[in-house]
Image (cartoon, rainbow, N blue to C red; front, side, top):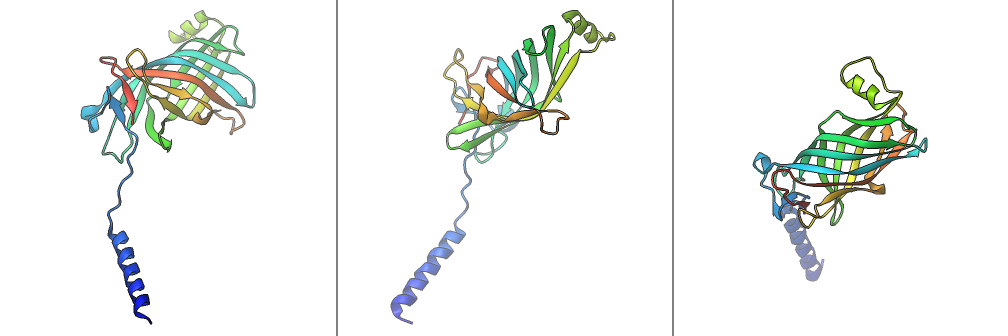
Length: 226
């Protein structure tokens, strides 16, 4: 074997060995910021949030029904670890009001169940941040009247005329806010995924459309993701 070939092989082995022993560099994961500064890691940086917005659930498989409500939400955001660990949170409150259902001309309501719902930040494409919310369960009901609904709330013998429960997870796109008067928000688009009607075995699905704005609960802090 020629000296040049031996030298080439030796250099290749050295390069291969060098790359093999290089430490693995963890990729930065999306994390929460408050007023432009990363939340402190762990419970010390835990920040409570308040949110609101109008959402519409449109059936895209197995029907043509639509459900729309104004909503109020509450929960918290947290950066549990280092830069390789994505931010997390919980939706601890989700209340719907002034609802309209295409198939309910009387008094429709929505009840959030199985709270809290878990949230994990994700970055499916470079610079695109989404909030993965799991454990969602929404009970959409149609009552004969507001009075019937209120009687049921007092424990009296009243039942809704109809109910549809939707379950699953959502991947809402996170849009950056610039101030307390222009807060960040979660945008539910076609890529956010679909919810499935419980018991339908995938034959009835709905797509969520709309936005939920949010900021810090204590001082209307600007909450973003980076």
